[in-house]
Image (cartoon, rainbow, N blue to C red; front, side):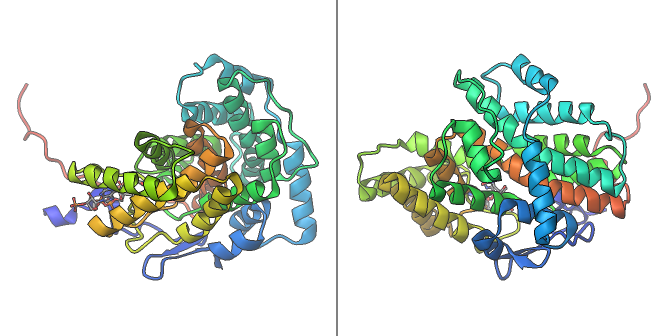
Amino acid sequence: MTETDIKKGLAGVVVDYTAVSKVNPDTNSLLYRGYPVQDLAASKSFEEVALLLWTGELPSEAELADFVAAERAGRTLAANVKAAIDLLPTDCHPMDVGRTAVSVIGANHALAEDSSPEAELAKAKELFAAFPAVVAYDQRRRRGLDVVEPRADLDYAQNFLWMTFGEEAAPEVVDAFRVSMVLYAEHSFNASTFTARVITSTLSDLHSAVTGAIGALKGSLHGGANEAVMHTFQEIGIDKNETREDAAARAKTWMEEALAAKKKVMGFGHRVYKHGDSRVPTMKAALDKMIEHYGRGEMLGLYDGLEAAMDEAKAIKPNLDYPAGPTYHLMGFDTEMFTPIFIAARITGWTAHIMEQRAANALIRPLSAYNGPEQRAL
Ligand code: ACO
């Protein structure tokens, strides 16, 4: 075994087939079940995209209507899920709350140990419907606010914002949120999805796989980057009264200093895309609409300043987390809630992969090269 036989981080290693999504780094494109993600983001609801990821096809009107009705009926949390959340400190990370909530939802489930395709799909749909209530419940308890009950007359994105903020969001805001959910839904064998597949490969249950995936998503090299992007903006300083040009100049200086200090700047770079993340143009367009909606040109200045300085110094492009972070900030979410929103979206992709892994399973168990001490006597 030589050094080159070891694929650190599994970089470049193909471990299985998937029909869920196709990432093409050469053309910077991403297909969900064959459809370009930007086309789905332009015209499909998140509910339709979820069904596409799970079943392989866009739903008929009747299939969509059935799912929408079930989703609207499944937006409440069991008393013991709320009680478990209430036991957690309000200053713990909200990803810990998400992880705990999914674990309790799994423990409650009558079909927890049933891994038939029908049971797995039912559990995926139920988790999809319930998880926004976890995020909203946690965001409100952190702010000392009463719980807002879901509304069955609102769609998924509208209701998510309603339960979180207690008021109906403007259509532009709902649309930007929907776009973010579609873009975050799926991305092949990323770290959290692979984690879910590893757990599934042992024949463990769906909620265990999702719980493990949440742990993987929390890290700042993966989903935690959307939160970390906002910490960068906050470190540079957000001043609503600053001009776009002044904000860009300050951001540029910050980036030059950060790179000189050899810092990794979150929201830039990608293991697979080396010439730009396929999802960024669509998310950036949604961010632009939010900047216009909220009249916050200085945020665009910060965004442009960092991006230009990174491009000039290292030619590293932004990833999806870069435009998503400021978008959620403008909508009013606390920074720590950004990655739990990512969970709500990625539950679709994770569970599609769990079902795919289950259908053609092989235990995932790689080898390692031992580099500890030679055998020795006690
Ligand atoms: N800031 C500064 N330099 C960077 C960055 C960055 N964000 N990303 C890569 N580089 C540099 C590295 O320092 C390294 O430079 P060197 O060769 O001079 O040492 C080179 O680019 C290659 O970087 P690696 O980390 O080896 O590349 P890898 O493919 O392993 O990393 C990763 C991909 C982990 C995403 C990396 O780009 C990174 O840490 N980015 C910041 C975290 C982030 O935004 N993650 C979100 C991913 S997308 C998502 O989850 C939706």
